[in-house]
Amino acid sequence: MNVLFSVFKATSIWNQAELIRRCLEAHGINVVFKRYISLWDIIWKKGDAYMWFAVLNPTWIVDSAVVYIEAKKETGRAVFYTTIEGIPYRTLAQNTGVKYVDFVANSKFTADCLKKAGLKVKCVVHHAIDYDLCRKAEEKSGRLRQKLKSDFKDRVIFLYVGRDDHRKQLDRLMKAVDILNTKHPHDFVLLCWTELRRPKLFERPNVKVCGTFGSRPYFDVLKLMASVDYTVFPSVCEGFGLPVLESMAVGTPVVHCWFPPLSEFSLKYANITFDYSYEEFWKTTAEQYFWMHMYDPEDLADAMARAIDIYLNYPDEYTEMKFMCMGHAGHWDYKDVYKPFVRMLTGGQA
Image 1: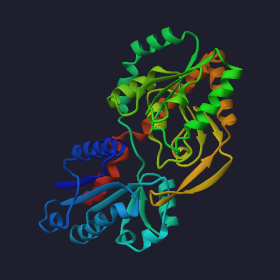
Image 2 (image 1 turned 90 degrees about the vertical axis):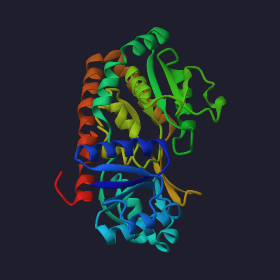
Image 3 (image 1 turned 30 degrees about the vertical axis):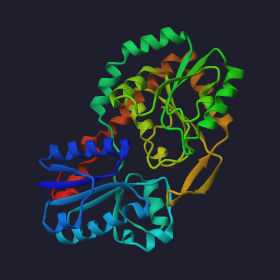
């Protein structure tokens, strides 16, 4: 059986698409990646089934929606997997063929956003991790961890991995660092693996830029996550929030705000979490209202301070948190999480 698979050009999406491919191929399905699936592919029966994976910006996927409709009519085996960070503009969603697509959402949050725009959601299939790869990264992280502990002595090491955009709220993270620098100046360091769009933002005591986002292999990022004491995830708006799951899988607890979709898969009592204060809906050029879950930087600083206290003064509790994170993350291994796609594309049992 051949499945044509069209994947949106973004690193995080391609990484997940690769896991989907591996899951399908483990069940005897041949996957052919394509930048674009055309109506000619359907007419000439180039595939036995068809799958799309894209961000749901309505005008970005309107052409694919037309092809999806035809593929579903001709084969009955068509899947459109999607993610979004907010509510699509209803006018764009309801005045195109996008409204006829039965979407598979990557989170309950994504599903809610689509439904608020009047779009159809078939089901939810969360994003996944390669748990074996994460365990291998943790096993291989010892040398790097020794170096970091040698460089920063007794300081608690936090890590941020991600882009610098308004959804990630690095300004709030830096304000939290300013607060910690007045209360715990000798107890922590924050490593940032990010893009240097605003280099002066990171010119603060106890902040070190250790790499440029997207510049190193994925396995190296996992090893870095496994080498630090905590990952900090300051974001307020996500379609899924994969770094939280990846960090848990390598045994590193995460400091993050408790909001959907992170609350769908994070483990509250094994991570350091705090509540958001209010919601905002930001009109954007990305054809959606970003659903922002805003918090006070002091709440993030307090959470990081709690993390410092646990690591320095309650080592048994910290070790238990690590093991709970690893065990919980194992439920999101791609071999299990992506099985529903096998059933959808074959009509059989996986």
